[in-house]
Image 1 (tube, rainbow, N blue to C red):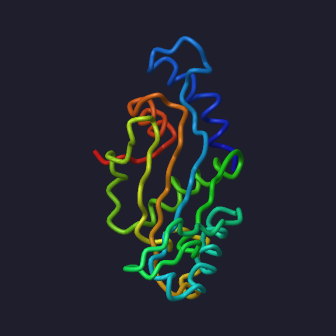
Image 2: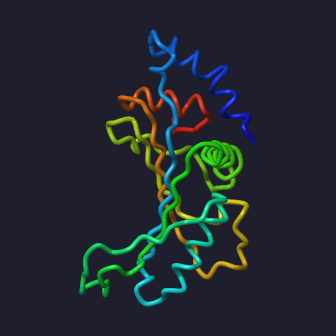
Length: 179
C-alpha cells in the first residue's frame, strides 16, 4: 500500500514545487508524522476502558498505542496524578503512508452525511488537526466488540512553513476539504 508515497514522490512533489514557486525539491512540504489521540473522560471510574481504547487505536494503526497519563490531580473530575486518561499513537514512515491512504480512501467515505473535512483545523505553522466523532468509521473496528462509541483527534504534522503550503500538500494527497 505504498501507492500514495510513490505518487507523492513522482507527481505531487514536482507539481507542488511548481505551484508554490520553490526552487529546491527539499523545500517542498512533506508529511512528517500523524498522531492519533483518544481522550477518555469516563476512564477515571473504569480503567478497563483504557485497555479497550489502546486495543482500538492499535487495531486502526497497526502499531501499539501508549496510554496517556494525567500530569496533575483535579479533584472536581476525580482525576488523580498519573492516572491513565487516554491513549495516543504516533505514526512515521510506512505505517503513516498506509494510514493516510486508508483514511482518505476508505474511512472518510464511510462517515454519514460527509461533506468534507473542515478547513479551520490549521494551526498557523503548517500542521492540520481534525476530530473524528466515531471510531467505527474504520474497517478494523468490530462494532459488536466496543462498549461505547468514542471520538479521536488526528493531527497531520507537515514540514510546511505556513497553512497555505500545508493545505496544498494535503489537497494534493487527496484530503477532501469542504467547499
